[in-house]
Amino acid sequence: MVLSERVVSGRGAAHGVYSRRSMLRGSLATVSAALCPLAAGQPVLPAIPGKPGLKVLSERPINAETPAHLLDDPVTPAERMFVRNNGIPPDTRDIDPLNWTLELAGEACARPMQLTLGELKDRFEHVTLALQIECGGNGRSEFHPPARGNQWTTGAVACPRFTGVRLKDVLEYCGTTDAAVYVAYEAADTHLSGDPTKQPISRGVPMHKALEAETLIAWAMNGEPLPPLHGYPLRLVAGGWPGSVSGKWLKRILVRDRVHDGPKMGGQSYRVPCDPVAPGATVPDEAMCIIESMPVKSLITHPRSGSRQERAKPIAVRGHAWAGDLGVASVFTSIDFGATWQPADLNEPANRLAWQQWSTNIAIPTLGYYEIWARAVDENGRSQPLVLPGWNPRGYLNNACHRIALAVA
Image: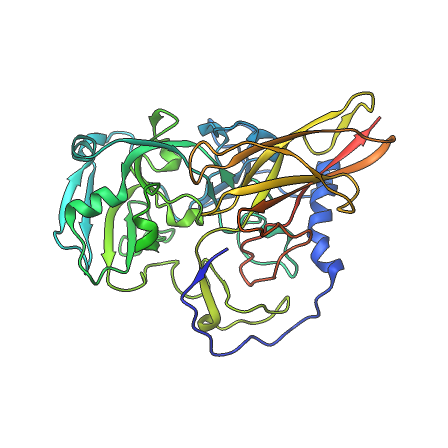
């Protein structure tokens, strides 16, 4: 994980005492819910058309996550991709997508201009990349004390294949001045209040991320026009960073001469304490740092948690692993609660910033209840923690080892 804008005036006072028991409570509750889904006691919200099996967390704005076993595909299908909104999506049913206009502006934009989607397609090289996107709050439900916000478990992550043009090519075309520091977006979604003068979200990235070859202005996903919930007709994709920087329904690109100050950039949004704090601490805004590259993480997509397996043959176990801007070096599994670990086979990514598939076969020694744990290590040698990482007020960056529960008969 990488943080930026380190401005610290003091740590928040501790309001609780760290305990391993409290940090594990959320993880164990997740496993219990897998074995006894009805015990979770969560209300069931209406399903999203075209997205069977996704769990809807909120209706206004609409947010939904994908159960781990439905994320087994190497390339995430549109119907399996999680939904994360801050506002109300625009009605784009009757638009002419080729006439959708993108404005290039900002204090450090040398030649402000407007380009239609048709002009983007005609003037710039087309690029197709598999890019991993994860909500910064994925795993929030496990934090204790609880953090407010959508209570994501493990399913706010995906890796579709996007087609578009490189943001850096467009920035070179309009020109940037020596004062350029950040690149931000503005979008066509509507604030929940309905006030047209307010934006639900407008975030950005430093110039070095904007100029990466993998940062795209995209119009297609998996060879089809972007689905309406995923930004049709145009969006940003900055893989490996919080999904909130990959703005949907893209209308403006701003080249800023400062760290962007749009909605959800300041305060405590998509920020964590610059220094570790005790669970429940009050942290002042000036002691919070912007989240940049996401931490190393893995997901078990097969078998399904809560399933019953036969002891007679080895169990095929597989999943994905990713590490923000970095690659994954290795993945390990454990069936004895982390006492011992066995290496798994790990595939190379389809391209930089795509997740990586891993697989192994596990022999279960006796009958009974088992948990399979997965742990990834990035190319810099940093491993997933076995328990929840440092608590933070908004419940970001939970990359604790994923675990599933099995009954072996």
